[in-house]
Image: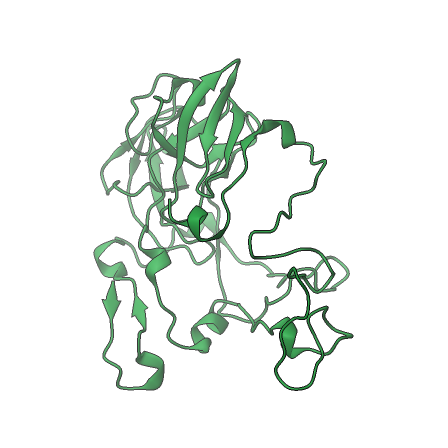
Length: 282
């Protein structure tokens, strides 16, 4: 981490990551990069479906492989920054000559070999089915359905712990402290996602959020009653409600349950995530 002297107000408390010591390439591999329109939280009708998105610096899309279909060994050629995700990606060269981008684990470096196989060694970067991962091992980029590609555990510094296996399922402890079951035929990558200091970055000013495409968030209590359930009142008021609500009247924040009561995957949840301050300090 790099911190700055407060020679301006926006520099006070600001910190950045020292990419120079971690990254080995400044330009992406041209064959695996393409442009494209970013939809800024809008649907096909142009209506906002996700608030607080828009603007930001122009980005190029890196074609990252989350399926790991190739089962030949690959050598890591570069460690690169990807503006579309928090973890680092790497260009790997397979033995048959093909190059692909992969999401890299924390301890990997240029020249290391990555293997995707049923009985691959349990070393960071290697990919294997959950049934072959040692109990207590850390994995990331975990499939939810076999062959669908990694969906769970892809953010910087995160890992998922394999805590048990029983009746064809593996029990996984998620970063949120939730324990859920996944078919043990799903594949996962050993290790933790790279760039584990990402959560320590302090923006320092609102402009850095705008560069990332994050628009301002307005408090519900600052709105009118027509705009938000927390709105209204003379001067600065409390929300006037026992429980916090979203703009659409749904429960939100402060440890309230927001999961759909009859969600299709409820039977896979062994224990719900711990919420609040106690749950956050694992």
